[in-house]
Image 1 (tube, one colour):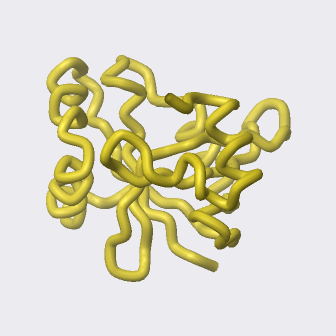
Image 2: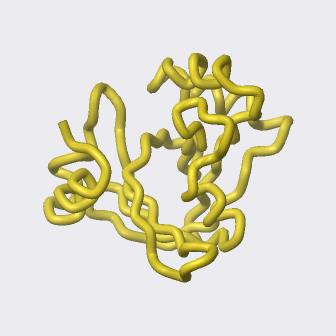
Length: 133
C-alpha cells in the first residue's frame, strides 16, 4: 500500500497510474508552500470533484490539531495540484457554513471514516475547496 513520500513519488513518476486510485477512493497531490520554511510540501490527499472545484478534508485523522498542509494553505492559498497527469495552479479556500454540509456529504460518501474523525475531535474539521486559477 502506498503511503506518504512513497505515494507522492510513485504518483508523480507515473502521472497517477500508481496512486490515484487508492483504497476505494481517489487521490491527488497537493503542493503547498511551507508557512515557516518556504519549502514546497507535497501531500497525497483524498479528493472529490464538486462542480468545477475539487474538495479535500483537513481531517488529520481526527486529531485536535489540523494537518500542516492546511495551515500552509491558510498562510498561502495558492497551491499546485496534480490529478493524474494534469498539473495546475489552484486557489484554496475553506468551505463556508452554507456550502459545507453538502460538500461534507460528498466527501463522506468516498471516505466514510471522515464522520468517525469528526466524532473524535472537538475541532470542526474543514472542507477545503480547490479552484483552478
